[in-house]
Amino acid sequence: MSSAPRILISGGGIAGNALALQLVRAGIPTTIVERAAAPRPGGQAVDLRGASREAAERLGLMPGIRRHQLDERGMSYVDGLGRIYGRMSMEDFDGKGAVAEVEITRGDLNDVLLDALREAAASAAVTGATGPVDANGLLDQRYGDHLVALEQDADGVDATFASGRRERYDLVVGADGVHSATRRLAFGPEDRFVTNLGGYAAFFTMPTPADIEPGWFAMRLVPGAMFGIRPDADPATSKAIINIRTTPDPALRGDRAAQQALIRRAIEGGGWHAERILDAMERADDFYFDDLARVDMPSLSNGRVVLIGDAATCGSPLTGMGTAMAIVGAYLLGLELVGLADAAGPASSAGDDGLGDPVAVAAALGRFEAQLAPHTEKSRQIPGGSLAVMLPRTRLMSAFAKVNVKLMLSRPMRPLAKKLFVDGGGEELTLPDARAPKAVVSAGE
View (cartoon, rainbow, N blue to C red):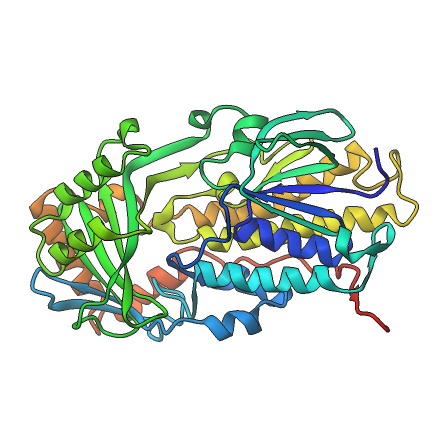
C-alpha cells in the first residue's frame, strides 16, 4: 500500500464536496466519483442554522453563501381561495422556525463548495500529511461514473467502477444519498436500512403566480397532502413542493407517469393554485419524486467504508435537516480523517498511527459516529411528531389542523408557538473544537 493516504468519496453533492474540501486543504489525495454527468443546478432552498451554520463558518463558506443567499421571509398557510390564515415569519421565530435566516438553493450551495474545492486544489504547493504534494495530484473529480463493487481487507479497499476502472484506496466514503450504492455494496440491501414513513415528496420548477408574495413560502393543506409554492432566486420562477400521505408502492419507483397520476389524485380540486401546479408538472424538466423515507443504520462504518449525508442519517425530507446533516457529518468526519493523517506525519507507513493503521481508523470512525449521534437524533424530529399528524387524511381532521395552525400562529399565542418551535428540540447542539488542518500554501510563500 502506498504511504500516501488516498480517499475515495462516492457522491459529488453537498456532503461529498464538503468532506473533500477539508481533505484537499490538508493535502490528502482525494477522488470524488459522481453518477451524474455534471453538477446538478438549482434544486430546493435549503437552510443553515445552528451547528450546520457553524460548520459552514469554519469551512470558510459563508462569504460565498451570502452572495447567493435567498430572500426568505417566512411561511404562510393559505386556504382554497388563497386567503392567508397563518404566518410564521423568519424574524418572529429568530430564524429557527420553518424558514431560517440563511437559505440558499442546493445547487448554489454546491457551487460555493466546488469553487472552494477548485481553489484549494489549484494551489501551487500544499503541505500535507505526507509532506509537500503536487497540487495537481490532490483532487480527482469524475462525473458520469459510479461504484459497482467493493472488496476490502484490513489495509484498504479495492473499488471497481462502472467505467471498468479498478483502484485501491485507504478509505471509501459513501455520500451518495438515500439510495446509496456504496451502502448497498458495503452494508447490504437497501430495504434493511431505508423505511418509507407513509408517503412521498415531489418538487419541480414552475412560473411564479402573480399573487405569490416575494420571499414567502405559501402552503396549502388538503386531506392527505400538502402543496406549496416557494420562490426561487429568480423571481420569475418558483418551486412547487408536494407531500403526500399514502400507502407505499414500490411500483412507483422510476415510473414518472404513475408518480404524476398519484400527485394529480392527491391535489386535484384542492383550490388555490392546484391546477396551475399540475399543469406545470406536466412540462417540468426537473421533476423530482421520492419516498418520504428514513435511514436507520446500526453503524455508520464497516471496516474502511463509512457513510455520511442522506446515505447515513436521512430523517426524511419532512424534517428539513438533510443539508444540515450533510455539512455537519462531513465536517465531523473531516476532523477525524485530517487528525489521522496529521498523526501519521511525513514518514507515514502501514503500521504507523494514521490511515495505514486499521485500529486507528476504527477508533477515528467510532469517534466520528459518537459525535454525530446527537445531531442525528435531533434531525429526525418531524413537525407534529409524525406524518399522520402533519398530513391528516380526513376533511374533519384537516379542518381541525387549520384551526390549530391559525390559533398557534395568532399574535396572543406566538410566544408559546415560538417556544415550541425554537426550544422544542432541546438544548442547542454544538461542534467540537476545531483542529486546524495543515494550510494550503500558495506559490511564493
